[in-house]
Length: 271
Image (cartoon, rainbow, N blue to C red; front, side):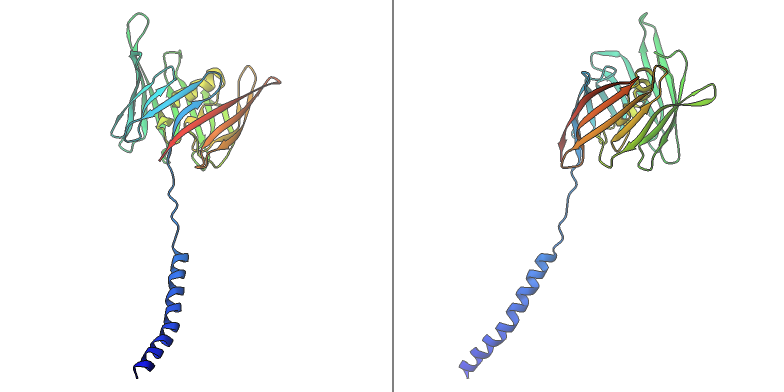
């Protein structure tokens, strides 16, 4: 009897065990694979023409230094918002930023002393729409005799599409970003979008440069800047990191029948 019990046990095992193994193999095959997105923070940016920025962050990944920019290199945060920027080489001049209860930028304030040691303050009003996009800035700076009123239009991805200056009550198209890629801008995690808004306006108005990369979420591939000295077109061809951030850019600028090309390079720290 014992002999037959062993035989029966062996027969049952031969049916049961393969069934369990198949189930275990199926469960292993169906186990979901989780992909963890890396957040990358811009470490260094070489924009060509000798424009090189080096960026550092605190333990909360808030931008703490922005070396290479002439107006400021230090950033102070308050309630997780960048509140004040200044130069560690000359603290007599600084820029402060004011926000509403929702964290939308409301004022940009330029404060300091002029060459005669006389204090000055220039207060620029910022208007934000219901999508929390900056739609207008009444920019008042020491370098401008009058207030420079500028308005913005955006695409569906929150990139600056058009920039206008308002002259004699009429919109004058200043800059137009014609197309974008679907990758991440180098500056997307730097908190520089609001801080550099005044500079984006200034550089387009005075120097014909497109610095909307400080504000855009994606990378512009074609731009036109309208200037009294001749319209400028820019085209950009990108290389990307494995995490989808721009790493190298070939820029071609055309103006008055002349072409100029240069490269931009970006490096990151990721976690």
